[in-house]
Image (cartoon, rainbow, N blue to C red):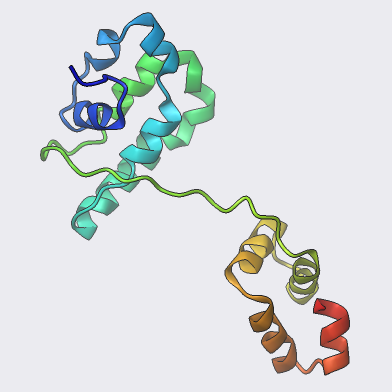
Length: 156
């Protein structure tokens, strides 16, 4: 028998709207059940853009919206809400959505962009830093009229 808590089994139960799946778990399995993993996998499918959009929007509407209010207190309720995500069109190939990198941003680059875009939130600036290389930021600095000396002192 396949492991009930394998992601494949969970997603098969989610796609088939198996409302009894959570009740079929043992007490130990219920303790190990991860609503977070279910949401991450459940929101992403391979296939048509329409199907991908449907799963993502359904997950956001039904699960992500109040995730921290309900989370571990009501795993069965989370499971029942998750079974409403599927449009009932058979099993889908669910994929993992990688989170943001935990790599620390370059502090000089962060300061440079924060000074350049004072209206932006720090989290948005950190995303910009992670998406750009130091060379591209030097190019930006040159484009806005900074001298080589200013660029070196600002960005290194």
